[in-house]
Image (cartoon, rainbow, N blue to C red; front, side, top):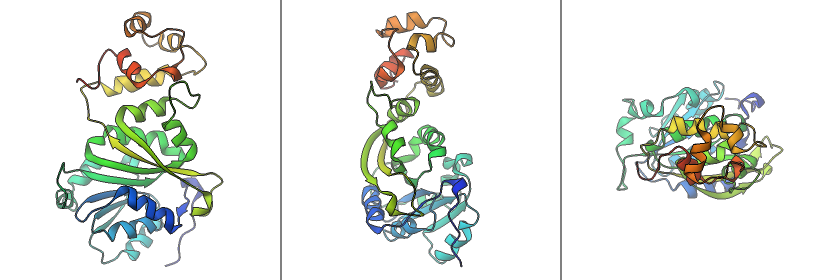
Length: 275
């Protein structure tokens, strides 16, 4: 079967350098019997290596032209399952409970919680949306190894006070322990993008009793206009914002990018660690 061209509309750049494929495999450390969800398998370079470990792979691919290629390539391989779907519209919990996959999710040679791993090479345009989705379903995963454009990773890992710090940073910090692993040059892909990529490992934090929707609304509003103070950004949503800031010990003249994750949590009046 002829290989389909990469589609710019889907942000496709296929990882082809075996050195970086190996680095991702090493980071994910797949084991026989584990369930691994792969988002955007592309032409299957990573999928093939993952399957060599004996792990059970559920590969979610949106591109209808790539799905037949993947199914043909892995025909007869019982531990690779190709799912044609948009991951943003897919309930991953339901997918793991599907009778076709459920037995895989509960069989592993390793002790510990019955969770899946996840690996993905994500285009820029769905970075925020996919992180929000994965944060909301993080209890399903033991760890995630994700590749983003380097610019996105710099935002995710930005320290308080950095101009790169924003909603995406706080979203990621609230849900995950974040470890930046490696940068990937354009030459590692076909076709070559114009920018570098970076790989991160995310380890889910425990799901707390905090109202996470309210927390995300607070943070999103706080970053609404980055040049404004936290007081001015929040006062439209919270009439009592002055009291909130005073109780949390936060100077109302500060800007959102200077706040730590702990300060955001205290603003909501709940402690994510204790709930």
